[in-house]
Image 1 (cartoon, rainbow, N blue to C red):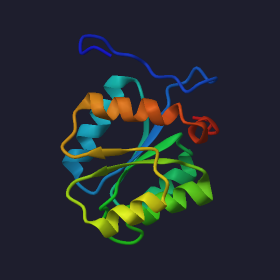
Image 2: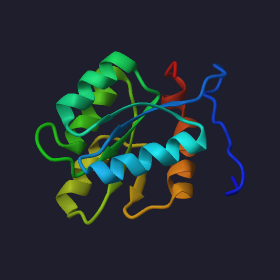
Image 3: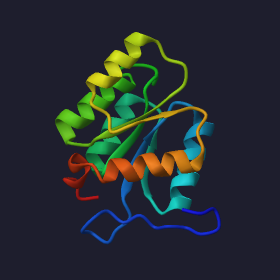
Image 4: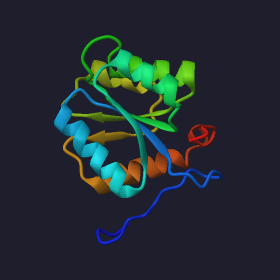
Length: 144
């Protein structure tokens, strides 16, 4: 994708833009992700600032994918939330992360994410990670 054109990313077989749930505790980062996804042609189904809020939104909207801050505060935290999304709702996750320790990485890997995006990130990094994740077999099971 070049910076002078927008590529609409349709979920395979649906003709609809792929749906993404943003789970980010920092409002400015969440707004930035929302704007970059909209420009890239994704459909943002909601922005959650906490695990419980994310679970409600995910249950109501059934996105194809969740973009989750691995260091989300509270319970469930980002790693726990991604496990719940995958196991209960069959929604895969991509983790965003800043500095993390080995314990957080171990727990994050247990959630079997479809990718990791280090903060700070560029729009192309997010777009490419989501595009790769949506081509993954577990993401193709979602209705979008």
